Amino acid sequence: MVITGASDGIGRALAERCAVAGAQVVLVGRNEAKTRHVASELRSRTGNDRISFEIADLLYLDEQVALAERLRAAHPVLHALVNNAGALFLERALTRDGLERTFALNHLATVQLGVRLLPSLLAAAGADGPARMINIASRAHMGGRIDLDDLQMNRGWTGWRAYAASKLGNVLFTRALARRVEARGVCVHAVHPGLVASRFATNNGSFGRLQRRVMDWFSISNQAGADTAAWLLGSDVGGRESGGYWVRRARVTPSREAQREDLADGLWTRSLALAGISEPIAGCRRA
Image (cartoon, rainbow, N blue to C red; front, top):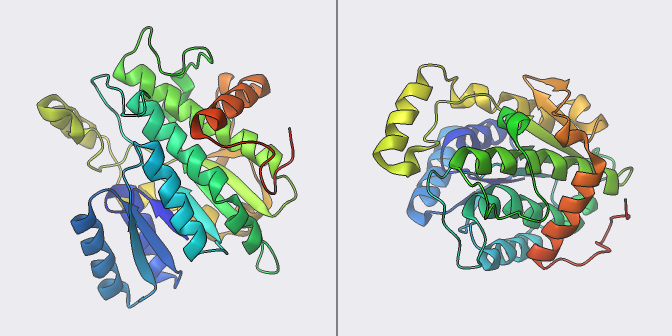
């Protein structure tokens, strides 16, 4: 399985649980020294030698695509993908691709990997059950709004609005992809991990670190935050249902916006165009 954002927080906790279970795990991180150290530490702590890593800065389109290509070449059969990498930014900035960075990292990287690795996931479907994709979303999607004509939020940007919109995008993408791979042997899930005591938001300077200290008063552990994703990866339920939004091992109803198929399809079309992916996609049917 492949886990993005695996050098810290929920991703690292999930990687350790999967390694303990004997899975082959590929950690994806941005910092090579840190990610290499985590991979080595997990091999030592779990006794599982089937832990490797890949380095990519998922803010950027070329690195998203290159990572997907490397993973497909190295893992033509892939049983699970966890799109966990993400961040909250309190200052608006564009990537070198001209994309608002919250959108680029939290949403478009999930689309890139989710779609470009579909052939490997479809190849894994069989006697052992369906392959699984977990997209780490958030309850923040409940306040999210997406304007299909202004995906980069040139109007009315705030850090929280951009974050909420990106998490709404995660749920919409999950639902859109699940419909397109229906009955093809890939189950797709969106998960709210809870408010987790991680390094989330500390990238925003002194204010972000203060915000993190306040959040930690109400936070759960990284292990608890990884629980629902781990359960969906290993349970029969996770292999039977697809397209759902999960909180504490329960499938719950997402926001009204997240249930709009027209919005999901519009975002799907625009996101694939920005990602440079053409339909029809191998293994997908048109919705």
